[in-house]
Structures are given as structure tokens and as C-alpha cells.
Image (tube, rainbow over the protein chains, first blue to last red):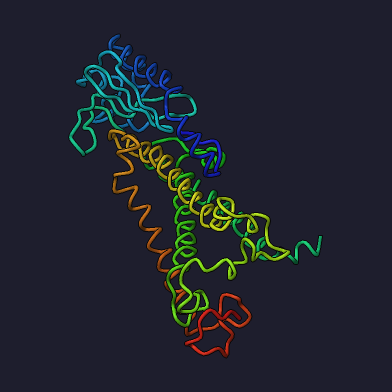
Length: 128
Length: 224
């Protein structure tokens, strides 16, 4: 979240107003593009929408990210809601929860196929 | 100009050192934030992005609120509580808000008294408590700013760790909020305690915060 000034009152006013709504769309669109690539069986395109670390994590045992990503259990679904805080976002789908990070070139997926574990971090099929 | 600087040297000294420290915090904070972002597999940010981030805001606000609370408590507690031998305290027996004559208010105002000290009723009450009211207001606003910016900063961290974000209400009940708050409060309260007690027995020649070097330990409210 971008707070517009360091003065306390300004911090308060802007922090209250800047919490997430205007940037939901780009994050949701990134998730939609990722799942469209998975649905189209286009592994290369899906991997290009992952963070570098997440893509590296799927390049294991001599198998490419493009192949591995299509073998994972990524349930997807319709976008229900999104939360954006600073350069991090969480997009909830009907059957999945996706985490993203904002890079200079846009939002990239850092976690997908995620299942909640109470107070512990989500367990994700794709994660950086 | 030279006269202005000399007459306001104390304020100018703290203003300049405050700005230098704030600038230093912003540079060090940017480097620290980028270390963490790289470790989390994220992208780095610029100095200007960092100083407009909730991370910077919460770090600034949490220190501001505790400093203003420290002075607010010191201002109010010294109205009613004394410490024998301390130059920071009134003499024992003088506890309380004192009379109009002692405070030079209302009809006891002198020619140089502020206009609102000469007034009666609400205006005098407001002016008579204006220092505490302003310090208290800044404390409350800073603490509120800490909670709001802290919510944003905490949620960004939560999401980077693949955890759910929380509401503002959830954040102000969280260990993170109270850890940030209380670690600042305890240090400020210890500093005031140290000042009150040490100034009974120790001296700083020439400082109005100290008793004169030769003043007895038991002498209260004497300033050197």
C-alpha cells in the first residue's frame, strides 16, 4: 500500500483510503490469465505468469516448469474476491486461493493451488 | 538572522538532528526492506517507494506515539505527583493544579500574560491545559496512524508468507501491534524514571534539567 506522506495525519488519512480497492482488477486479471493458460494446456505461458522463484521451484528433476505446471492439482474456479496490500495480493476463487506479488512488469503468481491450514501458511502446489 | 538562530538554537538543533535521523532511517529502512523482499522472492523498491510505504509509516508512527505519550504522562503526572530531590518535580506539598494567583490566571494575570490566561471559563480551562491537550491529541493520532499503517504493513507481510490478511480490529488485538506498542512504551517509561531519580543525585553543570552542582540531594524543584 502506498501511503502518501510521512506526517501522522496524512498517514492516517491515506492509509485508510488506500487499502486495496483500485488495484484489485490487475491482480484478478493476472490470476485469470494464469488459469486460462493452464486450461489451454499452455505450460510455457502459465510459467511466464509465475514469479521467477515459483517457476524455478517447478523445474525439478530435469523436468521443465512448462510440463510440471500442467501436472499439478490446480482447481481454479471463478474469482470471488481479492485483497491487495502493498505489493502483495490474495485472490480467492471458488475452488482455490492464489497469492501474487507485484513486479515492475505486473502481477505474477507466487502461490497457487493453495489449501488453508488454520493459523499456518497455506500449503500450495505452486509456491515461491 | 544570527540573532534568530541564537535565540532559537535549542529548537533548531533538535529540528535538524530530527530530520537527519529521519533521513537516515529512510535509507537504512529501504535497504532492509529490499533485503527482505529479495529473500521472499519479490522485487526491490526505490527510496521514494519505501518512504511512501506502510512499512515506513508504521515504523515512524510507533516511535512518535510513544514519545508523545512519554511527555504527556510526564506533564500530567508532575501536576499531582512529586519526587523529593528531583529538579523535574514540584516541591512536596505543592501537588495539584495550584491557585489562580500562583498560575497568574484570571484577575491575577500580569501585563505579559497570554490573552487566554486572562480570560475566564472555557477559554482559560482550554489554555490552562493546552500543552497536555495537544500532546495527548498527537499521541492519539500517532497511535491511530500506527494501527492503520501497521494493518497494511502486517497484511503485506502476511500475504508474502502465504497467510490470510486481517481486519483493522484484528490487527489492534494482535501480538504484532502490542509488541510494537509496548516495546516503545517500556523504554520511554524507563527513560523518564531514570531522569527523575538520577537527577536527584547526579548533576549536569549549566543544564536547566539539572540542579546546580552544589545543590543538596534533598533540594526539590531547583534548576541549575
